[in-house]
Image 1 (spheres, rainbow, N blue to C red):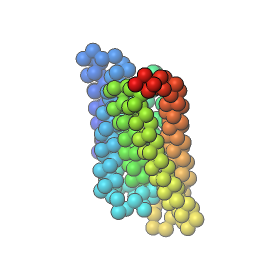
Image 2 (image 1 turned 30 degrees about the horizontal axis):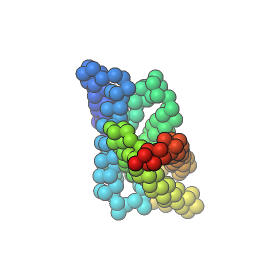
Image 3 (image 1 turned 90 degrees about the horizontal axis):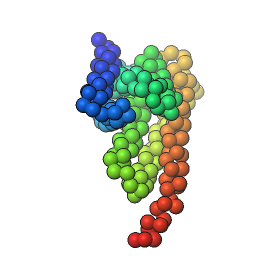
Image 4 (image 1 turned 135 degrees about the horizontal axis):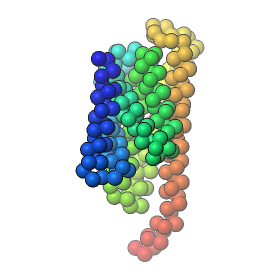
Length: 228
């Protein structure tokens, strides 16, 4: 029963996709709808976990997952979603394959090692808030809203950089001083560091991409300002 949330999440996302297709939406639109549902739900669950365990963030990397049931619920919800969505990514949107594989690897190794669940929860809400903002921008695509999105998205990734260094600091202490009271496999600190760095680099690349798009839009935005 422990992993029932993974199966339920997978089934729920699949049903939402099929329902969207049944109501006449195209594949891309249906994928976007399910993706938005996941972004919003995961961000809310992540914020809930962060709030519940805010006094234990110093153990986010290596505290036992079973001490953080809300974080575990979120992790299982995410696993179900990414297992569902990787099918669509493989067929229609391969540019997200690297991100999805890193995410699945992070959640799966966290389950195996029984650590890093709370760190993953905070990783999740920070990254998903950015995705929710982008989905909101897509509702009305204007240059002004895109500028606002890029600035807010960048701010969220600056906080993610801070959080990543905070987690890497916990990894460094364990590598220097030993696991102490923590119980985990010997490979867990190296895996945690690798995945956190990989996730940060992927998100940094997203920031760079959005800034490149924004700067390419500037020549188009300038004439509009002059006309005003």
